[in-house]
Image (cartoon, rainbow, N blue to C red; front, side):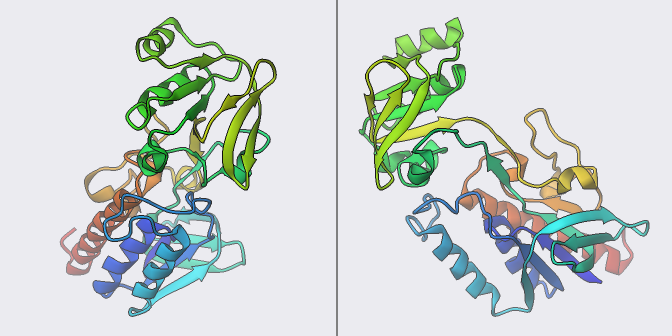
Length: 299
């Protein structure tokens, strides 16, 4: 019986592991290496680690953990549930069966990527989902904002903070009058044709081509096509979800399931690496205090 199983080895899970290791807790961290930002060439906005490749950041974090007795397993959790005695049972793809007193979900979200020819070579280089994370590197460039109808105009409006040259590509869908008026007021051109493909040179965007009309020269594309929970584990555990599809949490990242905590993008708050790490640390404190209370008999 472990104290804590952490599911997810991104910034949230690793940060929690570090704090809990320093609390002398028996921890197992499970990770399947499919993090959301694994396509990015750099990550941004993290003090002391700005512009570092995500893989390098994770390597540094694993090295920090190597000083402590954290058991890191590269495996994917396929099933988990709460036992009758309120402990947790986790089964992995390789057949491992683990039990713990507490679980931290740091499973994140999965972006719904545009199904466009030429998109994947650009993803993480010149095509991005988060303006806060990557728009500074494309400041004052010609930017295409992609989404269906209103979604494209919404992200185009946000991108005007970084560039005056933003075009909304609504991919043949309809935008409502309110969004069309906002685009006009903010001098955002709209391309209504369906997008055919992205022209690029080794992942550097050159132009957006449509099924009709002239191509749109562009140096970057930001997309707004939605996201979903990466893992089905929150549903299996019986977590409650909010209206945005995020997992409800209360004080110190505790979910609606006793002993089950959550940190990172899965709660759909501010989705920055540095925020995920902070939530991991916050969850770790909540977990440790709950374990302390149980050990003292003060629950």
